[in-house]
Length: 130
Image (cartoon, rainbow, N blue to C red; front, side):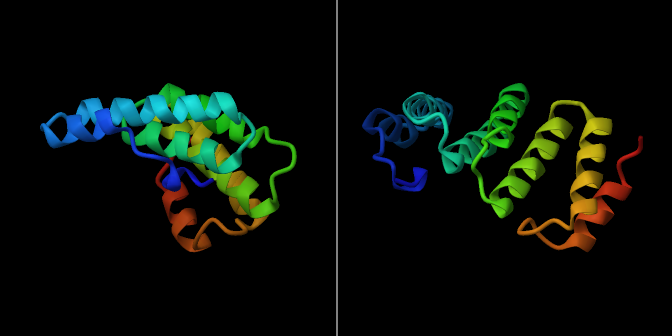
């Protein structure tokens, strides 16, 4: 089941309707953590955890989930490349610009299968200084 197909948490929906988006975001985060405990090797779930953590300003948690995603042994190459890209972004958000730039350069050297336009990522890398 894709995380976008997950059942909605009625309490979170009620909090959002009552003008409490932080409560809804926290409920969504907790729900994702619960699913991760049940299926810790599901790449799409780990990817969503990284994305949601970054959106919620949880840089350290995003990096930890990205590292777990990168460590999955059986991920197909496009998914593995995307995981390494998410890890580079999480490094940047976690205040580790040099490590992020190095990770992005390594991805560029590999050709970036399935991540996005090589030129735009190369341009993004050029703004990060070692």
